Length: 92
Image (cartoon, rainbow, N blue to C red; front, side, top):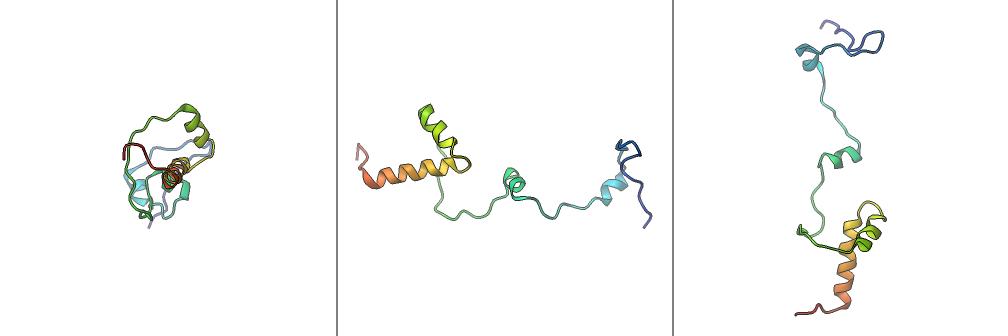
């Protein structure tokens, strides 16, 4: 197999890629977890399926939960579950 030309020249400029260059590229074998999440790669759901809804909450509640970092929506769900365990919703 002939050796391919470097992709950059002495000044660091990238040359135009050829079809042969593209054919020689190898697929990425492993991506960091943060990038897999951004690309939508996720494993099977562990708990029962959740339902996507739209809900309006006060700005204070949303900002407070968002300030806790990633997973804040799960913590909102847990807080509502806790409330349901202790209270009987009106209208039942």
